[in-house]
Length: 325
Image (cartoon, rainbow, N blue to C red; front, side, top):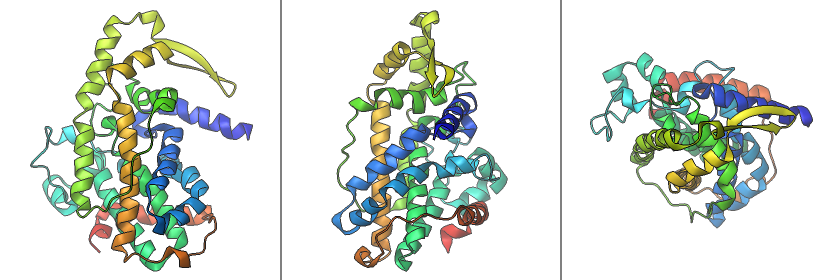
C-alpha cells in the first residue's frame, strides 16, 4: 500500500513538471468527479452505478495511466483551439470529417481531439447499454467521465497549456490539481438531476468553448498576483508520503483561488453534472434498457482486455469511423 501511494505522489510531481503529458484535475479530482456524478442519476440506473461505485471511482484515472504507454492516447485529453481560431471560433468545423478536410488528420492529432473522442466514447457507451454489456457499460462510463472532465479545464484548450509562453510555467498543475485539493471541502458538489441531452455535438462544443473563454482570466489573474505577492512566499515545501516536494504555498494558492471567484469549483461542478447527463443520455438513446436485469456486482476488467480495447480505440479515434458507424 505504501508503494502505491508513493507512486501516486511521483505522478503528481510529474503532473506539475510535464503537464501536457499529465492528468487534468489530478488523480483525486477525476475520482471525485466520477464518484459524485453517480448521485445525479435517476432511479432507473443509479442502482447499477452505485453498486459499482468503487470501480467507477478507482478507474477514473485509467486514461491518464495510458498516456505514457499507448501511442495516440495523449491527444484525446485536450484541444488547442487558439491554434485554429479566436474565441468564439464560430467558423471552426465541429464534425470530425469536416475538420479533417479543413486541417488534415495529422494536424488535429497534434493539437488535440478531445471533442471528437468524447463522441466516440458516447457511441460505445450507448452500444454497451443496448447490449446490456456490464463490462462495456462500466469501462465506457468511467472513461467518458474522464474525457468530459478534461474538456472542462481551460488550460486543456490552449497552446499555452502550462503558461510556458507567458513565463508562468507550472500553472497547469496549479489550477487543476493544487487548488481543488486544497479547497474542495468548501465546494458544493450537489449539482442536481441528470438531464437528457438532445444534441450531444453542440453540448460537447458548448462546454469546451465555455472552458476556453476562461483561459485569459486563468493566466492574467496569476500574472497579476505574481507581481504583488512576496516572491519568497510564493512556493513552499511539503512532505507527502515520505517525499518532499516544492509546490505553490497555501497562502499564494488561497489568494489566486479567491481572485477567480469560484471558477475552479464551477468547472468541477459542471464536470460532475455533465458526466451524469451523458451517462443518462446514452442510456435513453439505447432504448432505456431495464437495468434490473443486469447482474449487480462489481466487475473487474482484466488488464489485458483494457489494453486490447485501448489499441482498438486509438485506431477508431484516428480514423473517426467510430463516430459515424
